[in-house]
Image 1: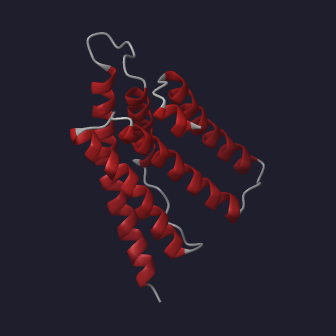
Image 2: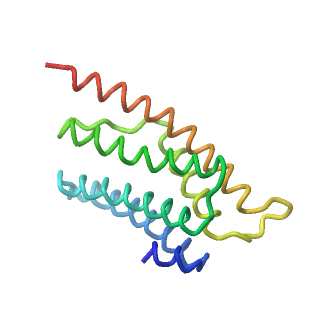
Length: 162
């Protein structure tokens, strides 16, 4: 549904669905941990859902023509990270690599940036929402590069262990 909303250029409904999915992911994880209802399958499905949500949003915005220049490069970095982290965690099996402290800032800037790009014309005074969204995407991509380097260092070190 999110991809379809992005393709039909609906703006706010796609932003609402994207943010609702992100909020649901956070709440679901907290409830599961609080009730001790976690499982390896649930953890795997959560990671797949996270990556799919990012990938669908980036792909939808790209096809809709909302990404260009450095913002398109930033979006490619975010999409590429999805594959790198998923592949690394698959290779590590149960010994998955945890996120860094920068991860929350990266996710927040990614969600805000993609949301602003999906709903152009959001009133921000003298600043265009797409300009701010693009800036947040570039910031998120830079944080992504830093966190991916940490993932790779830790993951490759673990893979080299006997």
